[in-house]
Length: 237
Length: 237
DNA sequence: TCGTCTATATAATCATACAATATGCTCAGA
DNA sequence: TCTGAGCATATTGTATGATTATATAGACGA
Image 1: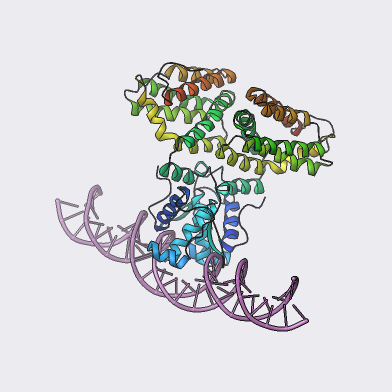
Image 2: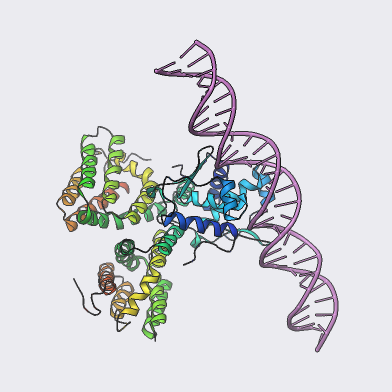
């Protein structure tokens, strides 16, 4: 995952504290130690700590006020769709409950995105989509498949010409990525969903929004059924 | 709008630079002046400037590296769904194009959210929804209506029990808010969409996902037709 | 021509000092 | 006893200077 810049010291501090908060190790309402104390405790300067705090504050995780100190904010104020917050969440605790919510997001906007793409895609975007599809067709193992698959879905989103959708996609899909790969790995034939992809591709090529939506919908429903284990080759435990 | 904390100095600096970047006044790829120079130019200390830079960097707007300096990143790296980035965008330039994209997001999510709400809402959430609906019913002017309307839609989102959807809603809806009010103001009868809201409410009460989805869908289509100026009370397919 | 080393500019980090700001307490006055 | 103004205090906010790390570009030698 590794979204936050851990190259820099403040990035490292941000990550450390972020994970501690998102994982629930630091409860909402709880007051953090004083800047000076916390800085000493983490063995960094107050400057580095403060820059980290600034970022966490911008993500809605903490709130700092003079005299009263810095407190962890309640979950409803967290920027849930922030890439880092999402990544920290996935890193700390991947409860089935949360993965399901991510899946719901995907189920909602991918079919809609396919419909939009069918309406608004241009020639170049269609070309990208075709390239991704061909790559899926030609893939020889799950890794190649997974990469091409990701590119396919990204190409669909890009073809919507809506940067907000693209952004949402990259956030959700990145967070879902790790679980995503398992899906393909689990099934005996990792190309089982290729026909669905073809339908989506064809519908977008022919500019048929409703067809594209339905095809994508079916693909996702099937993929979820596959992930939740209603499928052959149960490998786990 | 006013999302970013302008109470603090670094918040102010963040906002200033953020707007300058998002509005295109500072082009992607362009290098900002050196920390020291920029700090002097903006009449703040390097500390304040750096903390602002840290936040902008976390939002994907800029990238700072030793020796090479700080540069504005390309748009595709921007965290488009960040509340501040969105607000800055709306503050600087509200091109019809962008408002339309926000509307698309809403069109995708709200019907789906209504369906989820019909499945998963609990008694307390239904109560909230009813309260909002009653408030809409009882409203005596566009302002009261707009507030109750917002609460209604928020209640629907909350009833999905998916914090990711709630977060997306609050982001999109807040950004759309200002244009939203105009919709009600434009039409002769600002309560024209009340029947739609009733349908949505009833469907969620009766736990009828598909009905809720369709009702919400119709409401939004009608609302958009109304905003684009195609006359009130006339549904354009 | 190529790679390595060195100089240098810039951000990154640190340490310290001072200012601004809430909070809660004290204490006068009714 | 209650009330409110104001002061003491703790904490974050801001400023400044110094030092370190890092990446670029240019010099140098093979």
